[in-house]
Image 1 (cartoon, rainbow, N blue to C red):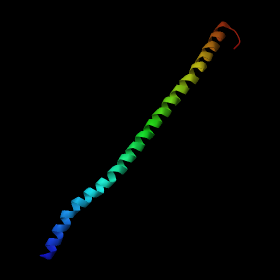
Image 2: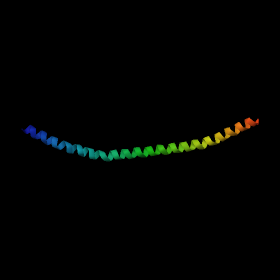
Image 3: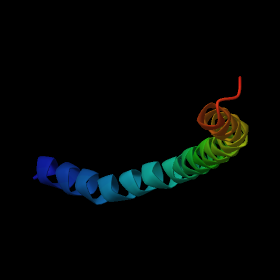
Length: 78
């Protein structure tokens, strides 16, 4: 009978112990999520800057190529 009392007391305490464990993990998980969000925002910003720089670089190159084609069509040197 003493064994039954011990087991019932232990099972009554376990959910509370698990709840305390989950409550202590909650701030850590929130911190990790916020760090991941900041990391994702930084990557998106980097991708936007890279795309913008690529467009700025590609436009003069395309214009130069167009001028060279026009000059070639007229028989002029590049």
